[in-house]
Length: 249
Ligand SMILES: [Zn+2]
Image (cartoon, rainbow, N blue to C red; front, side, top):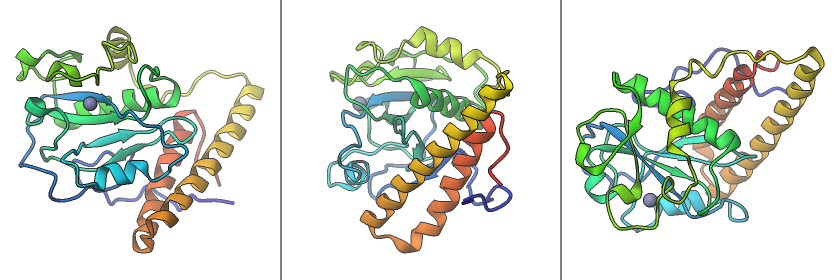
């Protein structure tokens, strides 16, 4: 069974993360062009299981809340992108300065494993895409113009959403990990370890695929499904490649 359809699909706009699944948010939840100098991280305060539709519903609800990216957790760890270079509504006074990233999970759950790796991956892409020249650093509300800042929601307003203060993410470790060179380098596994890992990844890809097919069915957007499949295939291919393996034949 193969989901690989050939070379990467050239359907991304410049501001669209090539490793993200495009799941657009409502057009009314934006307020202009975003000139971002940093990112604001959020604890989404929900787990996808057992309600697969919660992410879609939260984004498309009447509530005046929107954000650019959602990163889900293992075993369905993916980056979802909802908006490009527009101001969204996730942290009040920080909205015009930052890209909003929601992390699936309920505080004080630690952000770890594939979800954490995807966060590092996304932040690296954002910095490169924006051409920010400064190294990443812990942002504060008073330094809105300081590029490559990483904020928690609580830096902007009185809220319990605080991934650093609640010890869900260690900011020192995160910044150190962001300084490392390309994380997609081939790891030096023993040969038999490689085989084991490949099987794991293929099983993981199949599980993720089943999840998304179910989700698509609940959303009832058949016309979008082909586009979704392309993105999902791309993400899966990247994940396999990132572990030193060519896309499945
Ligand atoms: Zn928040």
